[in-house]
Image (tube, rainbow, N blue to C red):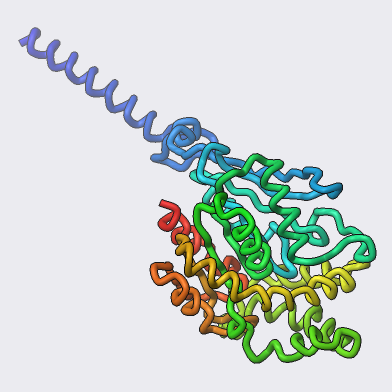
Length: 332
């Protein structure tokens, strides 16, 4: 009887110890750790390695050119070309979503963002010149092969680069950038008048192109869900457009836009001949361009992927997750 009691007592003691240890473990919590979660160090082992964005400058043709860069340098390269009146900043949403797998590089053109703003009297603000400088920029960085991501002004810069060095182009991604005269639409009447007679129409052009109302409309377009748009997007750009010298810079560059219209047939012929891998992304609320433009690309490149999204001219404002997913699928 005594042996049985001793055995029972030993078993009871062991059960008690196990119970006490279990309670202590359940109650214990690392600082900043929710109950039931792994310690922070254990969680960090499960997270993917992040690729920070670097903000750099380099000297190209006597100018300081600012650019953003992220991702492994031995990964497939994406060269991202921004629009008006933005800068490489517009691509921050893609840097946050794609730098784990791709080498992303996004420069600011001269006269934009953090690159130099040379005096228009001493520097030719033309799309030919931008393409030349950007080609030199890619050479300086050792980018010999890349996918071109072109938005707005990025289109005329990028197509010039593609035609001058087709061997460098892996594929094209077009986001709200025009390559057909019909894509400019009816709201370009005042702008065409400026091209025909600059002196008589410059004042009207500056009001049309550089005003706060136009700057805001570029983002939201006719999207009924205006609350989706951060107002800092257009107020920051409007503040940029009102910096000393900007009106002259942007007027010169926009006057040169007429050369893009003259070049559209060459770009179309190049696409029809080369049949590049092509992804077209378009915001259905974009009022800057004609909504039929995405399908015109498909006529040139029948195998093109075309996606019209619930977004505006700057589609990354509201559809960054969707665009990143489309780019990942396309780049594969």
